[in-house]
Image (cartoon, rainbow, N blue to C red; front, side, top):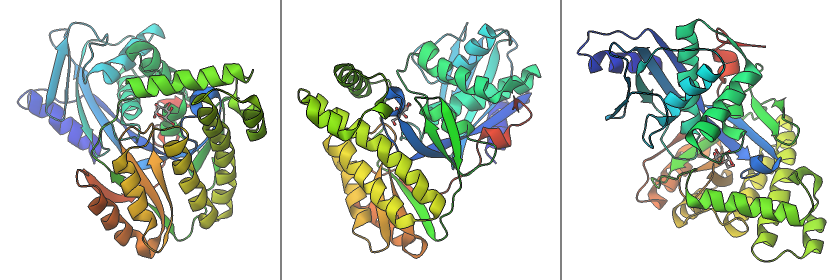
Length: 376
Ligand code: GLA
């Protein structure tokens, strides 16, 4: 169990002298369809997944903040970001303090089976796991919606990553489980029952780590906002593909806008397909999403394209796409279960630098697993 590993790691750090006082775990997220539309009010079909991150913590004896994660150790006098591996976890303490939940300086250990910087929201998972552990330490509870807002504020406002609301909302998920259809324009989240009988997900981490705080993501976000301004809209949900064609936006904003508008429509259609158990249609929408991210939004890489192409070449693969922000990271495929192992091997073989390929499953989010600290 991940939380147990994090607790062991924390004990090892002090030569066994200091046991963890609290711990928390949070899942990663997988976007099924609806990438790069959350920051312009679009629709996203996503789910929490069965891999995640755990954080164990205890008050620090000398008032210094410390964290160990995958062999990296950081230490500082305050929880403010310093541009290192401690930033996301410590940012959770900064936002809780602003909300009146004050914590002592902490020593923390992170354990994960979710690959880092691979498009599966490891950053949001670290921050949310830390926040759960901190709330347990403080004996405090938060309304679920408030928890999502604070986790987003930690990453966006404290760490300074220009992300949208997708990852934090997906990690928390919904009390009923299944997938989540986020309407980022209205701030609404609906349960989408997971009705796939025989289709499963396979993921392949290309080994190219991506950086959501990096130049590529910031540039796409700025382009998306510029395109929307030229279209006279504040939210992508109100624009039709014909509006984009008629507006004759300058290149590349015309293609960026086409992705935004078609992707948000695909996400809504994909939710209906998932609820109806129509894996074939869902797969086609996933492949169309990848083509749009590759050609119109230009966030794919040769390794991601190779993983997607290799998956689609295996009979029984229903669709495949990059997941997360792109510029590296992970590709996923929707596959008839008997073909899963063949697709897994094909994807891995197509990407020499891959850090691994595995079956990925949807899982309950924090709204189900952390009801001791989340309410409502
Ligand atoms: C990252 C960001 C999200 C979202 C995705 C792309 O995961 O954190 O807000 O923009 O990329 O869909």
